[in-house]
Amino acid sequence: MSDMNAMTGIEGIDSITYSTDGTQKNWDDTRRFFADWGLKPLADDAEKQVWETLNGAQVVVRKPDDATLPPPMEAGPTLREVVWGVKDAETLEKIAKLASSPRPECIDSYNNNSETQAEGNPHRIEMIDPHGLRIVFQPSAKRETGIQGSPTNPYGNTQRVDAPSPVYERATPVDIGHVVLFSDRVMEAEAFYQKLGFVTSDRYPGRGVFMRCSAIGGHHDLFLLALPNKPTGLNHVAFTVRDIHEVFGGGLHMSRCGWKTQLGPGRHPISSAYFWYFVNPCGGLIEYNADEDKLTGNWQARDFEPGPTVFAEWAIDGGLDGNTRRQPHVAASGAFLTQKR
Image (tube, rainbow, N blue to C red):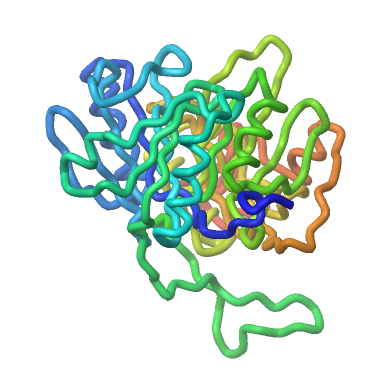
């Protein structure tokens, strides 16, 4: 394993930047959406919106023709930048050496003369990945929260005593968990990210790759997926919440607010995580995510054949209505759901 592949100093996603379709309606919808999603507003003016998770990870929204953004990787609202937080200056120095080395198959562009430097922060490395997405490495600004999900009581391993599990009226995401891109060059992109220190967790051979940004970490921080005749673009961004109960609470709140479920709630068998996907006005989908596998350098990447039951062990099509707690097309009496009419 190379020094870069052994590196564990990349800590996760510090921020993402979306662009809208340029209309006032989309700008306003985005504001309402992220407020309902449970993010804290930090800035809102004619140029940008900035939102924050509980640990300080940020979501930035800009207009599509913003001069600070690179060209989009697809038409319409989409993801324009991912900032990866690093542990220390040593990690950043290793990435800088790679970025400035003559390896064009890995690094498409490198810029250390960024807007951020003009603001007094020279510790920022920018690259363009094989999909045309700008990725940035800089010291992580996220903070420790001490937040813990609810303990569970699996058979033979009781962890919660004299205390009920929580019921959430809505979600307040703790972190930005992962990004998923449609890719028409999965193998090239996997090699690109491996040279930056990312580690492959699992694969759909020739069709998709799950990657984590450090040997020790959650199952994946990045997933690259190839679909027939599907060009490069954003699939979704996942936000980590405390536990399965918050996945449900957040999803029900979003449903009550009128946002459209794409799929969920459900469970991924590959990462073991619970999910609920919604359609995002900023492009692609957005996910509440909890309880993913934790991996170490001992993990051996597995190969899977794509299929519905591999993607989801179980999932509710169309979601749950936020008021009845049932699928939207299922009639309910308004009384107890188990009560016979």
